[in-house]
Amino acid sequence: MTSPTHLRWPPERFYWSVLEAPGFKQAGPLPIGLRPALDEDVPGEPEDMHAVCYPMGDGRLAVCAIAKADLAGIDADALSLTPARVPPFLDGAVSPDPFNLLVGDMEPAPIRRARLRRHAVRAAIALLCGSLVTAGLLRRTAHWDSIAASAAQAGDMVVTAVDPAGTAQGLALELARLRRATETVSRARPTFDAALALADLLKAWPVGVPSKPQSVTVSGAGATISVAVEGDAAPFLKALAPPPGWTLEEPRLSAVENITRLTLQLRPSQGVRP
Image (cartoon, rainbow, N blue to C red):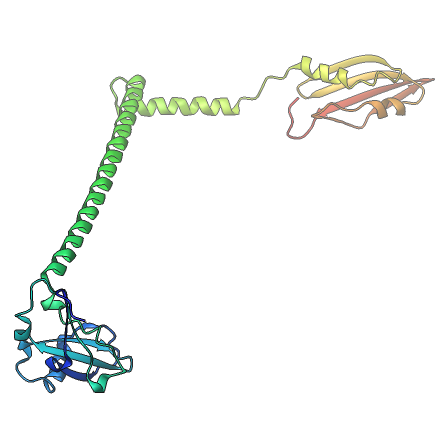
């Protein structure tokens, strides 16, 4: 049915053709490259005709054309113009609905205005988003510029504190001094504390085994213990556990009657400083 905005004309008012166009699958205005093939089936000059096409799915295009002069009298409010039906040789192959003649150069003004309005809205949204992103980047740039300026100012203050003149020679001398101080600290070894080492030895002393200490000598190189026990010295040696960080060397024994005198040497373990 025909309405004031959607027109349907009988197929006799149009020119019809079927063109060979393998690979072409887009409906709408007939491409300029296919116009010469249509000229054989349509009278008049090509520039005076308006044609649309629809792929039939087998490498062919169904074409519907009309003289532009016939479209001049269409009401300005018309939104579409399609055939009421297709000619018999296309019946069953395509429907008349895809053949809307009011497309391309003949697009109705309301549709064109709506399309341009949509494009304008999309462009405005894109512009707004770009502006927001730009503003955010500018703020971030300003933030990092502020941080860089603060860092530069702090660096200038350090340089001035080291050398008020801010000369390269003064800075080099101060850097060399700091390097020497760092190397000195890294090479420095902790002072040996004999009291702590003696305390560790006394904690490890086997108080459960009778013994008579003769002497205990502690130094940075190790510790020497002289002790006398009655009878067999094995229980004392078994009960004596070297403190952490110490290694007990082979003991020296000397026996006089029933008294066994032990000389024990403890050394710092490898990599451990007492």
